[in-house]
Image 1 (spheres, rainbow, N blue to C red):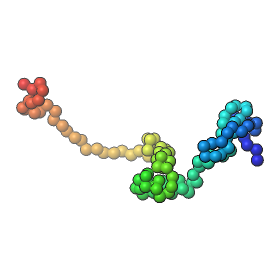
Image 2: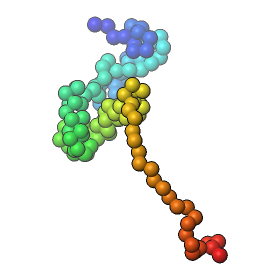
Image 3: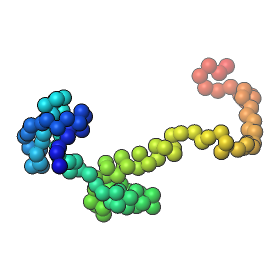
Image 4: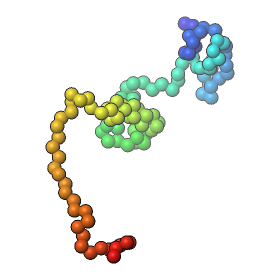
Length: 120
């Protein structure tokens, strides 16, 4: 297995120190990008799905952090990604229906006694 640059797919690289967690870092000789041999911050999909299910049940992000063992910022980021497709896009025209709304009447200026600033 040869290591490849994630940006340019080059196989020519050199060692570029160690991360703060003790993992080897590499630098691509072709494009100059630095990277690790693998992303050690990945959280498996089962943990992510469990955290999202707990959030959907009404558990707070900090409580999920304590129970599941992931950062509350990660949980909130996952929630934002999940609802991004649903909450921010308007429904398609085919799914829209006619809605009947009752009218509301207001009587502006019908007060007989003027009061407050500018009242005479």
